[in-house]
Amino acid sequence: MPPPETIRSRANPHYKRLRALRDAGAASGLCLIEGPKLTLEAIATGLTLVEAAISPRVGTTPAGARALEALAARGVPLRRLADELVASLSPAETSQGLVALANRPGFELERVLAGTPLVLVVDAVQDPGNLGALLRSAEAAGATGALLTAGCADPLAWKALRGSMGSAFRLPHVGGLGLEQALDTLVARDVRIFATAADGEQRYDQADLAGRVAIVVGREGSGLPAAARRRAIARLRIPLAPPVESLNVGVAAALVLFEAARQRGFAGRPAPG
Image: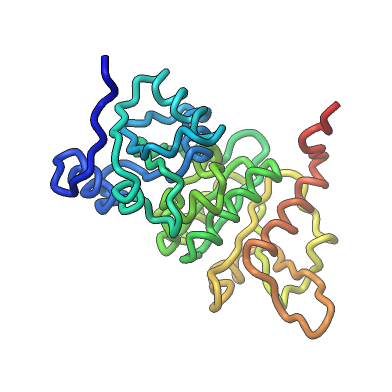
């Protein structure tokens, strides 16, 4: 059987439908995945991929060839498009020749709070790259999950997925919460709440972060909201050498998360060999 013809026209109904789904964003119930590596991450996580658009060059790289093989093995419909059409579907500045659509994963609150919770609470972080990095750090530190307030970026938007490098596919997270609602939920489950703040009264490495713990990080610029300052049992500061006054929210959260992981006896991934 000859290979399917490559679509070259923007008037093609397959292309127009892919474009419409991409533009619909979260409202479509799908997330857009850009590039072979994230596609392989999504497949490994067990997400259902519903369709993929590929350019002729995607199979010329090892990762691209693996992604094509994995997509074909799962029976995902592959639309072969001219390189410029795939690039127009991709939100990246430089397309990698593959764009896939997957059903958005959903997580239950119970998974976020499973076992001895280590929860990251993210309040209104609007930069998707920063949000993705936060989820990546949380997964790497062994957090049980994350609670995201209503003002946060979409954790499954392509920039957030690129920042999380696939962690948003795996780390349980629940979004769209009010901050007070998230804090009420944690208090009801006997989870101790800490918050990061440049003017915090306690050093982060001197706090007891073992046990059932949540760490609240605030939005870029305006910092920690009053509700978190009021309800946290301690506000944690990270000592900085002058003249530096503050850290990026992702860096600050990573330091505190890994300190909590250290206190909880987390050994990380064993060294190879």
